[in-house]
Image (cartoon, rainbow over all chains, first blue to last red):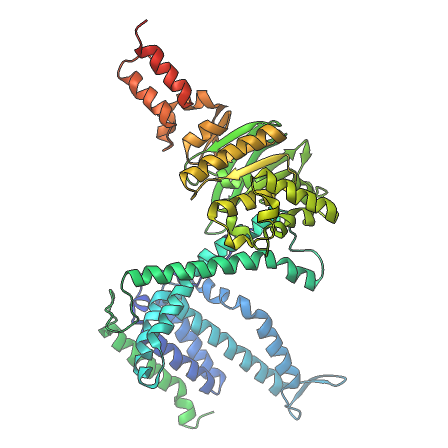
Length: 273
Length: 283
C-alpha cells in the first residue's frame, strides 16, 4: 500500500554528460527531427543505422542500455498487438505464403511489414525515452516555454502553460502521499477497496476522492496566495535564474543531427532500395 | 493485548529506493495501558503503529492482537481494524461526507451494523468527543473549525468501538487551548472506556501529561522502554537522540546541575512546585 514509494515521477537520470548539458530546446528539436526521420525512413537498413546512432547516444549520455529496454515495458502489449494485427491483416494477400490456417494467412511480405511497424514503435519509444532520461522536467518546461514564446502573438499563453506544467509536476508526489494517507485512514475505518463489483468499487473511491479534491483546492489557493505575495504577475518582464543559452555543443549537436538525418534519408532521395 | 514479535520492515525491498524502517521490534502492550511512542523523525514510529492494525504488512515478524496473528491468512483484517483504531496525523483531512453524522457513521456502516445501532453509535461517539449530535450532526464537516473537524474525525474512529486507540500526533496544528482540550479528551476516554492508548507525539510535555509508559524508538529499534518518570530522568540519553524532556523536568535538571538537591523524576507542574518549595523553604 505504499503508493508513493512505488511510483517514480519522470524518468530523469541525472548524469554529467554532454547530452544532459545540451540546451533543452536543442533536445526537443533533435528529438522531433528523429521522430520525423522514423516515419520517413522506408527500409530496414535505415532503421538499423538509426538504432546504432541511438545506442551510441545512450552510451554518450551514460544511461545504461538496460534503461532503454525498460522504457519499452509499458508498451509491450501494444507492441505485441500491433505486430499480430499487422502479421495477419496487413492486406498483403499475394506474397510468398508462409502459413495458411483457415482464413488466416501469413505471407513473407506481411511478416516483414509487421516487423517493420514493430521496429518503428520501438525506435519511437527509445528515442523519446533518451530525451526524458537526460532532460529534467524543469529543463523541459523551460525549453517549451521558450519555444512557445513566438506564438504569443497569436494568443498561445506559453508562460502560463509552462508554469502550470511545473506546478503540476511539483505536486504529483505530494498528492500521491496524501492519497496514500487518506486511503489508509479510510481503511482504518473499515473501508474496502478491492471488494465487490465495478460500481461498488467506484463508490468505494468516493471517501478518497472527496478529501483529495478538497485539499487540492485548498493547496491551489494557498499556492496562488504565496505566489502573489511574492509579486508574481505572470510572465511579463520576469527574469529567470537560469537563462537558456545555446553553446558550441548545441551547435555541434544540431549539425550532427542534421547530418545524420541526411545520411539516413539519403538512400531514399537517391532512389536506392 | 498487543504483542509485537521481532518485527522488521523494509520499504521497497530490492529496489534502488530500499529503506529500512523497522529493525526487530519486540514489544508488549497490555490492555488499558497508556503508552507514549517517541523518537526522532524517521525512527519508525508511524510505520510501527500501522503494522498494529494491519495497514502495513511487515516484511518479517509477527503481530498478535489478543493472541491472534493479524497477518495469518485466515485473519479478519476488518475485525482487527475495528479493535485497533488509528487516528492519523491531520485526521480532519479524511472527512468526506455531506454531514458530520454521516461521516461518523462511515466506520460502523462498513462493519455492516444495523441502521439503529449505527445511529446509536454516531450519537454516542459525538457526545464522547464533546460535540452535541443534534447541533453538529446535520452540519457539513467543511463548515467546522479545525479543532472541531479533528474531533469529528476522532468520533469517526471511536464509532468503531475500538479497544485500542492509536493517535499519531493528534494535537499537531491545534491552538494551545485546542491541544489542552484534546489531551483531556484522550484521558477521559481512557478513564471511561478503559481504552488502551498509544500516543505518538513530539511534545514531551504532552507525553508526560498523558502516558504512564514511554517507548523510545531510534533507527527502527526500541532503545528505551519504561515508566514515564524513569525515561524522562534519563535526560542526557534523550538529548543525544535529539529528543527533549518536559519543561518541568528541564527546570529540575538545571537546578540540580547548579547544586540544588532536587529530585529530577517529577513530571507535573504541581509536583515540581511542591518539590521546589520543599527544597527552598528552610526547615
